[in-house]
Every structure is written in structure tokens, then in C-alpha cells.
Length: 359
Figure 1 (cartoon, one colour):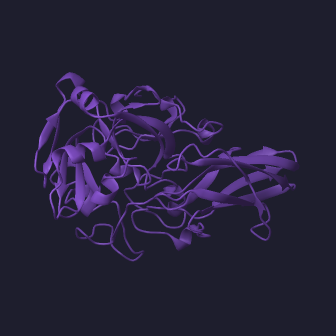
Figure 2 (cartoon, one colour; figure 1 turned 180 degrees about the vertical axis):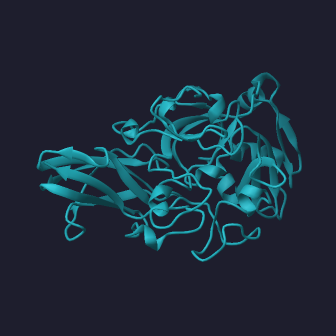
Figure 3 (cartoon, helix red, strand yellow; figure 1 turned 60 degrees about the horizontal axis):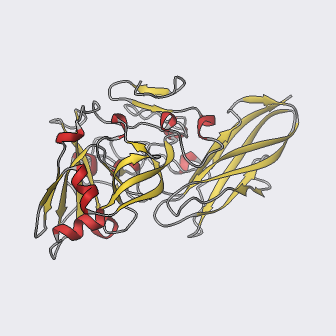
């Protein structure tokens, strides 16, 4: 569907939610569009870029309505390499601890990296003139989700200070090609370092506000609840999700695969949100008794993941290989999924675990 690989794991067809096999993300900093994960909350809108208009208003002095062509003509066109990661990435590890009804058991590949091209949101905000007292910027798409009652468009907000950062884009291209419909054509927001839900697709409204968005997907979902909280809480309960926590997982070899006993190469990705970067990845094949540092790949930008690889000595029989990442703030992934379990299954950034069989 939607030009994706035939071996995608499809968690639902409507809305379309899918992730690629681990190996599809290995060996390349940029993710091919056909392997880029999809996380949607409603049907993919059918949009014609020729009649698309972006409305920018709220706490501004000069509201604007702009077409994608007018955006490109009026503001500097730029590109940013950035990783997007779903807040539910690696949820399957939390489901294994305790069931999470109603949530898709995403594996470790609800994350991917692309070069995004468009204009800086900061330039658009400067043009409309943000007034004193503003604190947040809300994005609203045209996709309608019945997860809300009553159904509403998907949306969310980020603090004004983040919206004014030069890395935040209104993008119309991905890896040098026009956005495809499933990835937000004709226009989407890209908020590097924040959970993927804040990079709203099919965006047609931007509102500058004096408080965070009241949209269902900001006020009631994408919030970190304590383990004993009910899944359906009151709006505003829990912690609003924003920056991506340091995280890592394996991409090669396949989980559960068999190999001759002896040296085996393992590889994966690591990512940290905000303006933090991954500075170290450790790997262990003896339950964490000893660790060795993995080789880190190129850092394509402050906002991109790093691939890593290491060679471990695989004994005969079953072995669990572990990986953990450190970021530039000295934050380390927590050890076990039990330590981060929550009722919505967000932010599983516990140590990565790969089962291998030595023959």
C-alpha cells in the first residue's frame, strides 16, 4: 500500500500504520521512502497542492494565507536531515511485560531518517509578527480521526521557543522528491528532536497561542501516565510528550536467528532528541557482566540518528545480546522495560535485546 515495501508489518490498514523489517533500515543514514514507517490516526487525505492553502493566525499582528508555491517564493528554501521517531516505537517490549489493550505492538522500526526540504517555520512566524504573551504554536492537519469523540483533525503544539528554532520546517519534499500522500503531501511540519506526533502532516492551519494545544492528540493522548493510571484519563493528566528520550535497538542480524558459534557482527541505530546527540553505544553478550563499545557511524546532523556496529563472541546455544546508548547529556537507557511500562506504551527506551542461537 502507498508504495511501501511488500514486507512491511502492517499494524492496521485504515488508518494505515506500518513499519519495515529491521534490515530495511540498516546500512544507510537516509531511509528510502518505501521503507519509512507510517503512523496515521485517520484516512490519508486526498489533497491537491494547487488549491492547498496554509492559514497562519492566532496571536499575531498580520495573519497570512499562503499556498506552497507562495511559501517557496517568499521565504528561503532550506533542507534539514532529521530522524523522526514514533512515541510508540518498541511498544512490543512493553506489551511483553503487561498487555496494553487498544495499542499496536510496534517493533523497533517506527523510526527513520530523511532529508526534509521546505521553509523555516521561524521565518513564517517572523512574517506574521508574534505578539507578546504567546507561548506555543499549534499545528492542525486535515486528517480526521475517530479516536477522538467527537472525531476531529489531528493536531498538536510545540513551545514557541522550539518553533522559532531554525531546524523546524514546513516541508514539501523528502529525500529530494515531493512528499507522497501518506507522508503528508502537499505540506507537513517537521519538528526535529520531538516525538513524531508533533511533525503534523497535511498541515493547513498554524495558530500561535498562549497555552499548549487543546487538540485531543495533545491534551488527552501522547501523554506519559503513571503505571497505575487508567488509560482513559482526563485531559491534561500525565506528562506531555515532547523531546525524544535516548534510545537504541538492533537492526542486524534478525532476532532469533542462528549463526555459527564465534564472532558475529551486530548492528543497529541510536538516537537522542532535543539537541542531544548519541556519544556512545555499549554491547554485551554475557547478560551485562561486561560491555564493549560499538563503532559509531557518521552523525549526519544534530537531529539524526547514528548507526553503530560491534562484533560479539557468540557461544553455542541461546544468547541474549544487549545494547545501550548514552547521549551528550550523559543520560543512559534504563535497563528493563518493566522500569518504563506505562498504560499507553510510550517511550520504551530500555536496553535493546537480541536473541541469537550459536550452532
